[in-house]
Length: 112
Length: 114
Image (cartoon, chains in turn orange, purple):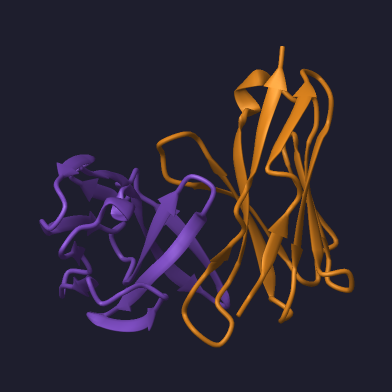
């Protein structure tokens, strides 16, 4: 089955700095990869999708990279703000079945 | 479009009881997936339905079951509740656009088993 690892369960950074979250996966080569944000007690919210032929994708202060050779995606939040504090999940689309695979998430805290 | 809705939002049950949770997907979405989320465990896949058919099932005991209706609304049922069933239950609807599919989650149902 698919295995997804996200770097350290918790990440604390100072406001204004860039947060970098890592997602590593094994077992297959997905056509795309997604990042979601989850706030406590709420469902995850889709943020970004990056395709296998895209090296980098940007959306406002968010940047995602996708290295299919390393089987790794990096998620960056530049000029971080306390409002960015949340858990961020990476997700891979279904392979042979119809099941999405989610990482356990990285809890980001931006300190004012 | 309205988002994914889940009812009820909060539920308290006792061991041995059963519970039914409901999910209404985004209009036009035919796929509905269910997840269990507990602290430290991440999103654990329960099952996925498409056009009233269960296409995939996660590694959960038979006490967990679900179904989907012709209007794509879905329910999941947990029988003989155990303390360990306390969790946030999330449903997500999705549609396939080309080869890309994105899941849209509801707010979840928080189940507490006493």
